[in-house]
Structure formats: structure tokens, C-alpha cells
Length: 557
Image 1 (cartoon, rainbow, N blue to C red):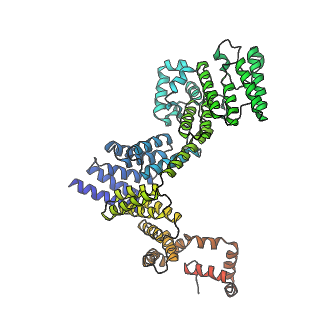
Image 2 (tube, rainbow, N blue to C red):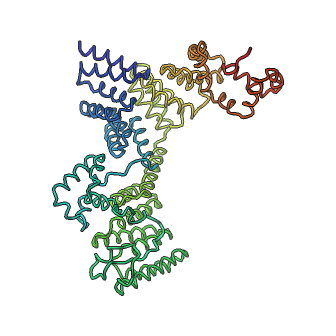
Image 3 (cartoon, rainbow, N blue to C red):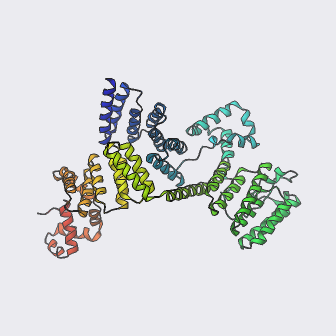
């Protein structure tokens, strides 16, 4: 009995959600949960309602409860990912979406959500990645003399663990100099000075002077301050000669005299074999020559030397990034991604983040194109049609989704899937599919009709009228289009304000009203009705005026 009452509350909540009465929806789902707290769908739906209200933390709490109750349900992870994305916790959102895709790799909501989060990150709109969550974070702090002692201090380790678990807590520890210093080491920047320790990976060798604060008798000292311009009087004779050779190599590189540049960088390595920069610079020359294997070999050698000498993380990261760029040129994209990831684990650079996302997107496009097969798409479409006729809408969605992947340019497939979403009351997803259908095939009347009906269900009468109007332009005798247009316009007929709102949804009307010449004509007609006669002699102006009369913008007395 309780289960029946709970489902009744759920239906009330679904209806309120469709009508955009989000608080009412939350109340209904809460009543359902009181009667049956073990039903994961109730929490999932309430999560959606909270998200619509902008209460994203509550949406996340309900989404996490959904996953807890039903860990094998992909949609739960979609709810978690969406809530985390709204909270701008993008890293965690990506993890949630990826966990869901492990259960259902073809789930459209999860794939779409993941792409949106990755788009936010690539656009530079995401917050700083959590450096304390890096698996190598403790090793980096232990390797740096200025932070090594912190690891023996219980209060610092408590801060570390809290920041690692929740990035939002990092702001609480910003008044502790140890925390600031540790963050700077993990990010590869000097936070106490407020300046970056160096730019990201570049294809051209840096024209900076390699130095050390003191003459080096060990490998470690020659790497301590690589890339910084200091007084060369502190260098050993060998290091000074190496620096001079590097500068000559840089000059030759800029002149594109690559063989001479290689000779100078090789000589620099002979004088100071423990400097990462010399290897990566020579690797850059090989890269420009198109000798990508030699570039990779030099950079790997530089990384090996850098590890031994405890070079700064940014130099190691730069070497990994150069290897990744070489693999991109060789079209070995998997290897490129692996090395971009290694670069980011050493030193986070926005340039590397951008390149990483570009390669990932390129790989997805390649996989997508390789997957296209119109024949299999038709088979999946047929299976989807059969499932739809039997009322098995989730199964139909699965087949239509596969058909779309096999033939993504067929707009009719999106229309079919939209019909399934409507049956499941997932109107936002249905509307999205209709828009894609219309984009791919603007002359497919069913796409406009389906969009109009969805908008009617969402009480968006003005927008629905525009969709049905588009359908009537394609087929003036279409009964469904006429009926839909009359239904969507019925409310507006007795309400001038709503009728005007409906008219403004029409792009043609907006263009007419934004035309300076037409605004001047309308102003003249308002002040001098006789001016209308003159303007109506112009067929183009007469047509535009008639459009405004038909939609109720312009009254006729």
C-alpha cells in the first residue's frame, strides 16, 4: 500500500517537474521517500528538482544516495556528475561520469555530460586542479628540501589529508605558510612570490642561461636552478662553457640552422651532462627536423638525468610534453595522451591541458568516424522501431543511440529517439534531439512537429507556435501542424501580451523589428496613418507589414 502511495507521489512530482514547479516537485518526491526510502528513483528525481532550483549541494546529496542504493544504475552517476559540475568540482564530475560509462559505455547522458565538463575545463573555466590529490604529491614534497620536514608534522599531514579529500577546504589553510609553500611545490610555482617558476612547454628552446647557485661537484647542483638567469661567475668553467654552447645553439636554432644547433647542444651536454635543458633543447631541434624518434630519445634521456639530479618538476614536465608532441606528429595519439598526463602530473601547464584535450577530442573523432556504418545503423533503427512499438522505450533508446553512432548525420534517428524520451517524460532530452534533427535536416517536418508537441507539454506555447509555424511552411496542409499551431496560439488569442511574446519567438519577426528602416516606417505610420498607403506600394515592405499584422504586433483599425 505504501509503495502505491509512494509511486502516486512520484507521478505528482514528475508532473510538477514538467510544469517547472520545482519546489512542488521536491515536496512530492520527499513524501514518496517518507513512504519508501529504499527507492533510488525517488532520490534521483528529487536530485533533478534540487538542481533546477539551484540547490546543487542538496542535488549532490540525493545523487550520492541514488548511487548508494543502486550502484549498477548508470543514471545515478549522471546525476552525481551533473551536480558536481554545477558546483564547479570538475575533476570529481569527470570521475562520476567515467564510473557511469564503465557500466554503460553508450549512455548518451553520461557521454554528453562528460563532454560538457571537458569543454568547461578546456575553455579555462574550471578551477585549479587539486594538487594534493595527485598520487605523486607526497613524493614531490619529500623530494623538495623546503617541504620534506612537513611530512613529519602531524598537524600539516592533517591539513594535507583534508585538502586531498575536499578541494573546497584548501581556502581554510591559506594562512599557514607551510600549506602555501607545499602548494607551490606541487604546482611548480612560487606562490610566496606570486610569480610562476616558468612557462609551459614550448617547441622552441628557451634562450635563458643555465646556472647553479654554487659550483657543482655533483649532478644535483647543476640542475638546481636550470632556466634561471643568474651571475655566470658562480659557474664552474665546464658549466660556463656549456652555457655558452647552449646560447650558440639557440642562435642557430632561430636561424633554422639545425645541424649547427645540434652540434652546439651536443657540445653543451659534453661539458655539463647533468642539465635537462640541453637534452630537451636538442630534442626540439630534432622535432623541427621531423626526426621525432630522436626527439623522444633526447627527452627521455633528459628525464632520466633530471630524476637522478632532482631537477625541478617543471623541467621534467616540459620533457614529457615534448615527447607527447612528437607522438602527435607521428599520429600515435594513445602514446601522446600518456605523456601529456605524465607532464601534467609533474607540472600543470594550461598549454599542456589544452593540447591534451585537443588530442583527446581528435581521438574521439577518429573513433567516431571509424565506427560509422550505415548498414548497421539501419539494423539498429529497425530494432529500435520494434522495441518502440512494443512499449519498450529504454530498449528502443539503446538501439536508436547505437544507430546514431553508426550514422550520426541521419536526422530522422534523433527524431525517433526524441519520441522515446517523450514517452519517458524526459522532455529536455527529447527537445535536444529534436533540435539536432532539425539542424541536420531542416526540411524533415516530423522534427518540427515533435519539437512543437514537446514545447506544448512544457507549457512553452509561444515557442511551440513557432515550431508548428515552421512545419506549416513545409506543408501548409498538414493537419497535425495546423492543430498544434491553433492549440499553441489559443492562449495567446485572448491575451495580447502572450500573443506578442509568441510573435517575438519568430526569428523573422525579430529581424523585421530590428531593421532600422522598418522601425522608421512604423514610427511614420504611427504619427501619420496616411503614410501607410505609400509604404504599402512597396511589395517588400507590404509583406513585412502583413507579417506583423498576422502575428498581432501591428493592429489594423
